[in-house]
Each structure stands twice: as C-alpha cells, then as structure tokens.
Length: 108
Length: 114
Image (cartoon, rainbow over all chains, first blue to last red; front, top):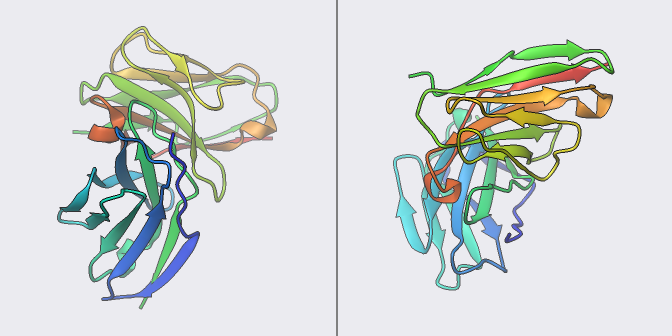
C-alpha cells in the first residue's frame, strides 16, 4: 500500500480557498486517490476520488499531476463548518488505510 | 434511509467483561468493516467481511472476533475487554471495491474499559 504524507494541521479564515497537498511517491498503477472528511464524533465521509488530472464535485476539487506522486485537495471559500480532519488515501482493493490526516481549522 | 447504524453509541466496561457491538446497514452492501480510532490518530482496520458468512483479519485483529451471519449485520465481539481496547469503534460498508466506490461509515461507538 502506498504511504501518504500530508501536513498535520492547517489554519484558514472563512471565505478563503484551502489547498491540502498529499505526497504519495510510491503510488502504484492501479491505485486511486481518495479524500475523506471527518468531523468530531462522526465517522469519516467520502469527499472526492480521482485517478489522474482534475476532478471536481459540489464539495471540492482534486488536482493530480501527470506523475501522480502527489495530489491536492482544494476547498473553495471555506466556512466554519469545514473545520474537520481531512484524510488522503491511496490504494486499490477492499481495505482502506488511513494515515493521521490534516486537521483544518477555519477561523472567523 | 438510515445508512449504517451502530449500537450502542457509548459503553463503559470493566476489565475482563465481554460485549458485542452491532453494525447494521440497509444499503445491500456486500463489504463491511470494523475500524478503531484512538485519540489524535487515524483509523485502523480490525476485521472485515466481503460477503455474508465471510470474515477476514485486518491490521489489528487481536482481542476481537467478528461474525457476519446476515448480509446486513456485522458484529464485533470483545471476549475479555482490556484497557488497551478503549477507543472509538467505527463500522463501514461498501458496495464493492472500497477505493473506487468509497465507504459509508456509521457514527461510532465510544468504548471505555476501566
């Protein structure tokens, strides 16, 4: 399973765009890149998933360069309710492996 | 549509006691999982099931047993609870390959072993 490295924590202010980068140097050909969001006292929630280039949904965008050794989750115009832990997962198959995640704090 | 439901939500056990955590999903998912999350850490896989009647070990299976007698239910048992098993337990389910389809998680069971 590919190991991922992401910042432990980030701070932002309401209305700003937040970019969280995840490094996955040993990603395999079959691996997908998936991001989850976890609020306190809740289970993680699937946000976005991609294989290459750019993916966008109603919540976020995911940018993946051609070499796929990193990926960036972009949250446009964050609000206080986006304060959460964000996990970057890389792999394929049936067992998701979670690292420590990035704790995002959005301030007023 | 309830999704994934875990019971109980909270429990305090004495060392050596046993208990069963219940996970129920109403989405007809084949795959089900049990994770534990310790303070400030990510989730670690305990056991999982790829279909009714099947179970398999994950990353941290010691001290736990599981059963999947019905497709919609996945039970996690602690035969003799230890303080090291104090944690928040999350159940999840997936329609197929979890990296592609993603998981749906329950809201967790907070277990304290004293």
